[in-house]
Length: 115
Length: 113
Image (tube, rainbow over all chains, first blue to last red; front, side):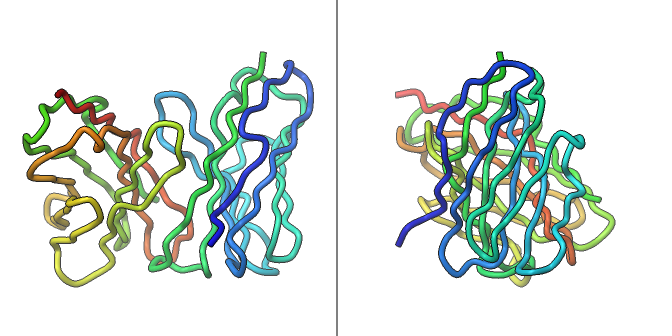
């Protein structure tokens, strides 16, 4: 079946512009996660959605970052007034439900370059 | 909170030789442990996971890892590597009751023909 998909695969933007990154989770997966992977670093947790519960936004690095999810489907991560330090690969993952025993399935990522 | 340390950023290994990629973690609660692999230009793929039970866990592509609670380690091993194992390997932990995966900085495995 189809895996997690993300779009665009690559995005180059000028400093100060807003960007939107999209994630389509695996159908039926109620949990959705966003991570950021900076060059030479591990993945950093950004935000987590589980069903209709309030999202866990504890990993968002600043108020320029926000994310939404429509029901149990598509999610968008928005970065306002982008800065060069926002350059990274943004990864989305989904899981059948929450809980440690459930595997997170990752998408291919969106590579964001801020010039 | 949890943290993960992968001390080796790069590991070159000759083809058909054994390899061990090291992972140490710290946590104030019990954890689940994972190894993910990222092949060039691809997304992360789960190699194996430790949830409970036997401390030796076998995964895909001939990899295995051993959970050592006293040393807070979860090293990844393969007895004989292949060119196709060239990739970046990430160790990750998830605390009980915590939804977030905490990742190490990754180890780039390069196989030398």
